[in-house]
Every structure is written in C-alpha cells, then in structure tokens.
Length: 373
Image (cartoon, rainbow, N blue to C red; front, side, top):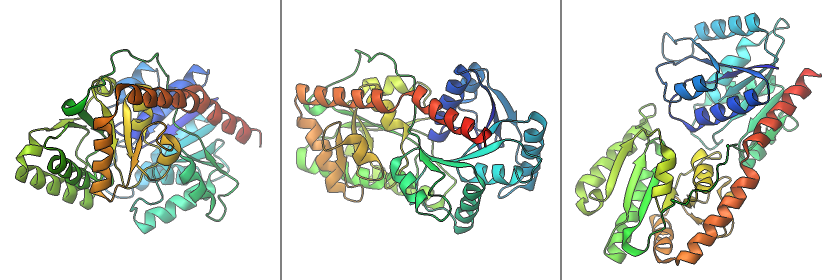
C-alpha cells in the first residue's frame, strides 16, 4: 500500500517520534510511506525520517492560524499520488487532512490519531473541528486506552475508535543502567518545558525533600522551552524565579535543552520523573521502561495501567508536592534488589505491550479493512 502520514513538523515531540517509528515499521512491512509537514523549520527528527528512506513533502505555512493554502497543497499531493491511506497526527494536521480529503475524487481512507488527552486545554473551535475530522475519518486511533474510552463516548465515534499503544524496536537490555543509593540519586525529566509537565509542583516537591532529608537529588530536564501557550510561558517564568530564590535546589538542577541521544540519559539516570497533570501515553515512559530506567509517574490517564500497583514503578498525585516528594523518598531508600525487580517487571511489560511490529500490524489491518470497503 501507499500511505501518507500528515503531521505539523519534525520537531522534538512525542507524536513526531511515534510517527517516525510507525513510518519505519510500515516501510519494513513493504509499504511505501511518505510524509507531509507544513512547518519544515522544526527538523529535530528529519534525519531519522530521511535515514528510513521516507519521502517528505514539506510545505511552509505562510501565516499563523488556519491556512487554506495548506489544505490546497495537501489535497493536491493526495490527488497526485493516489494514496491507499492517510494517517494524520494531532488536532491541526487532522483537521487539514479531513478537509483535503473531502469529495469522491479522493481515493484513500483517513485515520485520525489522538496522542494527547481530552483533558488538554484546547480551544473550543479547534476541539469541534477535530471532532468533525474524526467523524469524517474511517478510523480514530488513540495511543492510550483511557483516551480511547473517552473518544468512544462521543456521538458517532464509538464503533470507529481503537487503542493502539506506542511501538518501539526493543533492543537487548543494556548492562550500563545506573542504580545508585542514598545521596547520589540522579533524576531525569524528558519533554517540553510546558504547562502540562507540572514543573512548579516538581520544584516544590524537591524543596520539601530537602527540608525533610537535608539533601537534594540531581535533576536534569531534557527538552525545549514551549513558547506556544501562555500557561507554559507563565510556568517557565515561575520555575526560573523559584530556582533563583532556592540556590540549594538550583545547584542540583540542569536544563539540558533538546537532546538527540536520549537513550544514554535513561541509562545514566536512577529514575524518570513524569509528574504531568494529563497525558496520552508518553513515549518517555515506554522508553524508560525499555531501557531499564525506574519510573515515577503521575496517577493520570493510562499511567496506573502501565505502572500497576507498585509493580513497575511508583505513582504520585501530580497536584500534591508532598505526594511527589514521598515517591522520591521511597526511591531513595529502596534496596538494590527491590529496584532491580521493579525494573525487570517494567521491561517485561514493555516487551509485551510496546512492540513496534504489533503497532504497525494494527495500523496495517485498519488500512486493509478500509480499502476492502
């Protein structure tokens, strides 16, 4: 089959990385996969797509907000190349794809993907348009069970919505994974420095940890500053002020910016901290579990299913600095054998649930089903 994936950019985001994994895996199955983007300046993952041999159709958006130009360009490409299927990722790209595929002259079938959460503060008009795009699609795919359940409650989506979890090529478990004890803990945060990542409550939790224990773990945050959302900019300013006032904490805190070799960070860290107030299924949790990095995550969305009842990591209340602090404290006093056992359980869960072949096979089945209709 000939398949087009539609996304906004190749910037450093989880959706972009996920679609890279999907593109490669579908290509490995023998399909011709191409990509459409409309913000070519975000090119963090461009080299990966190019290494997979994926043809990239890059059209630069001429202005902020909705662009009819993008709809026209995308429609022209879809009609010219006669794709068997189009897979769109995230709200705006899905809206563009749905509009571009209106009419009988378009042959391919649309699969709309939701990799975030219905709890995200998306403008009402964009939410409405995404819902209409989902109604027009042959299938809607969420990358988490929780989000799939929420989508199925919406009129017209119950029978066409599916959950397909993130997929990865899973390597042999590295023997280089760090497991330290007591006052040498090194914690890792991976993701955009954005409002949903709950950075201020994390800082408050670390301050509380210092007050109760007299020391602070080292913390590294890998990710870019998100300037697209007022609440994110406000959170960044608040975090900067907090770190400026708390020198004990700031001396242990490092902003890494965007990092290509994220795997080496998992292997050098004692735990991934993900205390988001909402999520889909974060790529970073899956990656950490695959690489043998302990996980502390907020008890939202699919996290309780992924982590279990203290089987594969710790859960915390993202709105409670004390709860976050308690989880870090528990990690700091765990025995080597306890931590190793949880890491082993997490790896086994990842191997069973985050296989790249299973993900691409599920998408392939949907595309075959659509084209047989």
